[in-house]
Image (cartoon, rainbow, N blue to C red; front, side):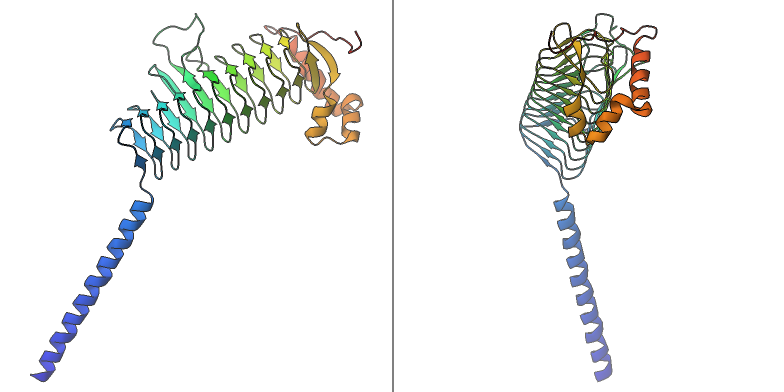
Length: 302
């Protein structure tokens, strides 16, 4: 009898210990789920079909549409809006008043670690009168871009084309990038830089403020566009332009230095075969069919 009682007590002790372990594990899982739970303010309007990742914060008066997909750890500040078929990558910040996407056919894709400034309009319908209502139109933005307040970036004008922004660009306040533009990587556009439709900008370019670029122009890598320039023709790689209408003012020596070119490499850019071949290629392409030629040359002393 004593042995049976002891066995019963042992079984009860094991069952009690098992229940405590199970309860502890459940509490741990609940804590983990709580840590990854997104915060959605009660004053936000989020469609039940929207896909919301983990650790997302959606502030008051935000709206998120039915086809939107919000990546992990994104922050939507008060009064920002994600509309239409729009995909927002992980760790993006959308500031107050910003609008991403539009309720029109097509898609807006925004990569990771992007900052969208106050009242920016990204992925909205283009302003090209040739756009036909109902056509699909597209915008694709890469990673690590900072797009500041009041910028506008439009979708493509046709379903066979798209507007593209690369990686690591700084697009300062009130800039405009129109339909079907293609922007590369590591560019800096100062305030009120305006790109008309179908402009191509390569990598590591710089603009000063209030620059205007005509549609279909090509801006070559490592070039610099001076403040207030009105660019109506292509800017070859490594070059600097200024004025209305913009004219070539020589090599962008300061820009080359800031981008890690040594004094020897800057000299080679002017004299050696390889950098010159890149520049010649850039110039040659500017005179191809449908292109606008290059900006005229003018000395600083004139």
